[in-house]
Image (cartoon, rainbow, N blue to C red; front, top):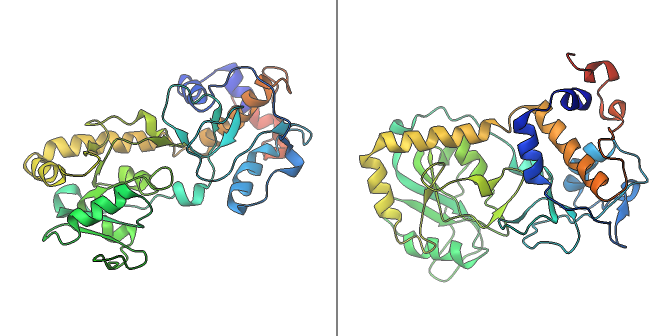
Amino acid sequence: MLARHDAAPDPAVLDRLSYYNGMAPSEVSAKACDLAHLPRKPSYYHYDLTRYTRAFPAFLKADVLFGDVITVQPVPTLVKSRPIAPDNGNSILLKLDRLRHFTWERDSIGFRDKRRAAVWRGGLINEQRRDLVQRFYRHPVFDIGHVGAPQPGLDPKRFLSVAEQMRFRYVISVEGNDVATNLKWILASNALCMMPRPRYETWFMEGRLESGVHYVELRPDFADLEEKVAHYDRNEDEALAIIARANAHVRQFLDPRREDLLSLLVLQRYFALTGQLPAGALPERGRFGYSAASARPGS
């Protein structure tokens, strides 16, 4: 697979590779761990990372930071999330915590057949989410509420599954500790995503999402939510065009072989630019489950 990529590089793969790993040549820190002793907690991060690092020699070292990362690290570091900023090159994105963030559900209800209202459910873990719920908690049409502990004047509302939220035309996305977990399934659905401009990004490349192209941008205080809902109820074709472009953004993440290839290439570039592997050195394909024959050009 990697050999075939080297023989005939896919421009889309190269573009994403540069997006995920924009680091400059550097050295690993004194705190870097070798691949045989990567952090084991949380276990789902460990599993997602070792799924690909096992293709490389165990003595290689990496700086790794698990969890919801919202700052850029002083040295190139493997992370799940990073700020959307021009100087985020030290944050090397990998597809971590994939079961939570990259699970897609089929939406069988067309936009025009959905309920003409906005919906949101989530925890009140920051002020922006609290502002949303306080403003629309008792709205006569929208179904907006939280599912955490009771708050003064804001009791939790009934949990809504993804399928239940897909019955609504407009699904609101609000960042939590880092990115909004629901953003990915919203953009894959037949609903219209409404959200403030995102500040953080993951493997999903939230930084490439454009207001009015892939989603409807809301003010940070959500004061324009009713106005935006009314506009797209009157202009359904505009909504459908945005939904189509959102779906197209999602499709680039649906090819398992391309996703695997990119994950390996991100690591390959990291190890090369930290001086641990020669540029262009290929991982041990057999250890990743690909035979040498299947990786030859044309196979």
